Image (cartoon, rainbow, N blue to C red):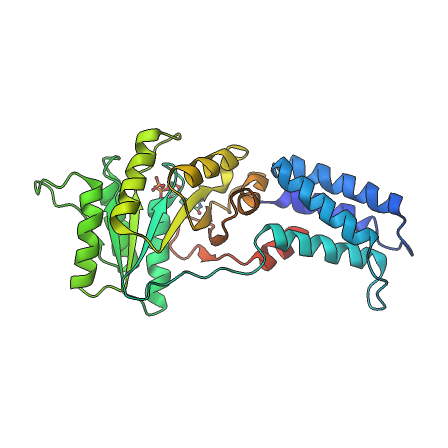
Amino acid sequence: MFDTLSDRLTSVLTNLRGKGRLSDADIDATAREIRIALLEADVALPVVRSFIQGVKERAKGAEVSQALNPAQQVIKIVNEELVGILGGETRRLDLAKTPPTVIMLAGLQGSGKTTLAGKLAKYLAGQGHTPLLVACDLQRPNAVNQLQVVGERAEVPVFAPEPGNGVGDPVEVSRRSIEEARRSQHDMVIVDTAGRLGIDEEMMRQAADIRDAVKPDEVLFVLDAMVGQDAVNTAEAFRDGVGFTGVVLTKLDGDARGGAALSVREVTGQPIMFASNGEKLEDFDVFHPDRMASRILG
Ligand code: GDP
């Protein structure tokens, strides 16, 4: 992902090399090319605008540096602005003062929530935590089973409704899971919720009811980076319908343009916290804005 964007930006910036001094016209021309590269990569328009404005203002007012030539200065500015739209610092999980820390996952069906639940559980277990996975996606026939498979692979227990126990209500399952976590001394609870293919009022209401029942410390919005322009609308709908405290980008191993996903931090104001880049449990990492910016700038 981001290959085209990366190639375009690298070539725009390479064109500056060798120039002794950059005139305002040079900077404007470069900014225009960067703008086109970002728009073609699906970066949301308001994000492109503020990015370009930032680059122009800083490049034109750049103090003369002994250490960097003009081209290097612009590259540094573009890099810093990119890190900025990606959130600046890495944001770590907020832990509850009194365990368990409750992490709720929300997102459209197919966005990669269940897979992510397993990845996150494994990651947290590796850090010495004792997570409990909770199956609250009772919409999709196979979802509970899928989470159990993922839990087995991650070697993390799964709390799921027992067939015939009269527990078909995901809100009730989520509530009981917190009691179970306290009883069995799990210090973290990861709640997988149902998604639909499109934004749907009933799904939002159910997610909001689960949120009210478990009072999560973190609500992570799981976003498939392959979906393109729709990513921004979906993110806004989840922000307004459920609210979230962080974003997880999935399928970063895909070959989509990806710029919409890169806009999500600026558009929603919430940080990208984790990144998923494959189907295996290991294909997962904390999101580092600076590393992502370096990857994009080649
Ligand atoms: P859910 O409906 O939101 O729970 O989504 P799933 O976890 O079932 O994932 C939907 C599909 O996407 C599955 O086939 C996963 O294997 C796949 N998937 C999930 N995360 C990634 C990823 O980071 N990269 C790739 N290539 N596939 C992924």
